[in-house]
Image (cartoon, rainbow, N blue to C red; front, side, top):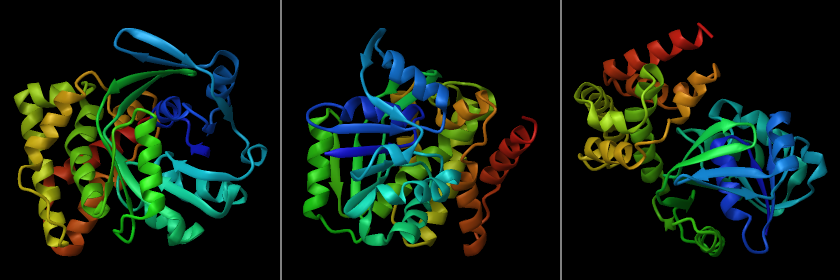
Length: 303
C-alpha cells in the first residue's frame, strides 16, 4: 500500500516506523526541512526501552514529488489541518482513504469539507512519542489504536486498515462507534495535556502527585458532563481511566508539553477549548477547563 503520512512530528514519525514493514511504500510529508533532511541522510532513529533502531524511510517536504496515495494518514496539528489537506489534494485519487488519528475533536469535519466525507475515516491511538531532535524520536508509551467509519459501519476498507496496522505491530481495532472513542480520547487529553504543559512534568506525575490528580479529575468531570449533555454516553469512571493512561505513559511528555517546551502553538483550542465552547452552547459551566485554557494561552503569548 502506498501511504503518505501527513505530518512528520513525533507521532507521525513513530507510526511511519511501524508501517514501513512489509510491502508498504511510505513517505512522511514534513514541514520541517531539517527533520526531513536528517531522516533522509541518516535514517529515522527511534529510541525505545534504552535501545534505538534506525529506520530507512523516505521523507519529503514536497507533496508534488510523491504521486497518488492509497492512504493518507493525517497527523498534523489540529490548527494546521485544513491548510495541510489542501496541499495534498493532487495526491488523492478516487479510492484514496484519508485517516485522521489527530488529537482533539473537529478534525474529520474539516477534512471531509475539503475531500468529501466518503473518503474519511477517523480514529485514536494511545501510542506515545516524544520529539527529541530532528531525525530522532522516543517511543514513550504503548497502547491500542481504534479506527472507524464516520457512518459507524464495519466496512471492508476499515477491516483492511485494521489488518494493515496489526500486521505492522500496532494493536488496532475496528470501531462501530468512533464518535464515542474520539470523545474518550479527548477526555484523556483534557486531563493530561494542559497540566503537564503548564507544570513541566511527565505524564506519570499526573497519577502520582495528588494535587495534579485532583486538577485532572476535575477537568475530566467537566468534559464528561458536556459529553453526556450532547448525548455521548461515556462511563463515569473516565477520571480513573485518565489516571491509568497517565501511569501507563509515565515517561512520556505530552504533545502539548512538547509544544510548550519548543515554544510552539498548542492544540488547546481543540481540547480544553472545545469543552469550553460546547459547554457554553449547552449552558454547562467548565471553570477548571477555562482556567487551564487561559493559562496555556498566557504561556503561548509569552513565546
